Image (cartoon, rainbow, N blue to C red; front, side, top):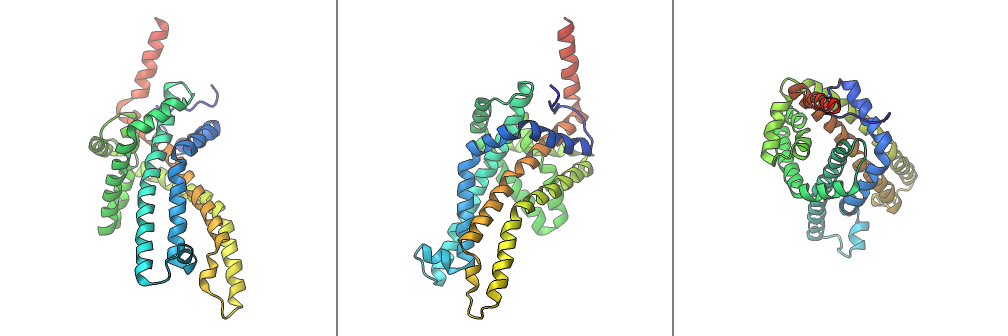
Length: 291
């Protein structure tokens, strides 16, 4: 199979990046279809929570539409609700996104380049709550490191980037996955950091393309309103801006699948360097063929 991506092998930085997009070219349509099917409801809830948050913070448009007035009490209540829904829907989406992408890769490897929808769905259902717990625990660790000193937070973010792959591919529990990620990345931190740094830059370039319309609209409307002394600043955030912003948000969260694929390739690269799993499997398969 010409476009088949062999995950279980060692790679350099350039190979990881090129194979990320090679996998997307061959399986992107099916993969994003599964993401929409499995993680779509959480993504919709996340976007609605974001719109509610924007309306609550930036103007009386959202508050008026919900009949809450402009009192401090109502604003505080709306703000807390929007933050709560953002956090819950965000955690659910990330658990479903990681589960969908990683189980798609697992199915892809198991079936020699074919992704079985039923296997992905069953896998996501099996690991949903553990992925939720893992994302919360990893987020707390990284956040703690960033608050007290930025460097430990960056270090932990790189180390924990492979934790989700360990949990799904090796079926280790949450704490064992986190512990094993430190062992796996030992001696390979800088290479992993460089790979993630490059893919994150590419990710944000792609996201910016989808956000350009909202920025153009924002500046054009801002320029037009600047000529009117009595203009209400909250009018900047009308339904058109919200719609364009929502498109940008959807693209931002969907394209994070690219980063998840890269972390899976990083995991297999590190695992191969440490344990030669793919090489041993290849030798065994050759022996079976000869028999």
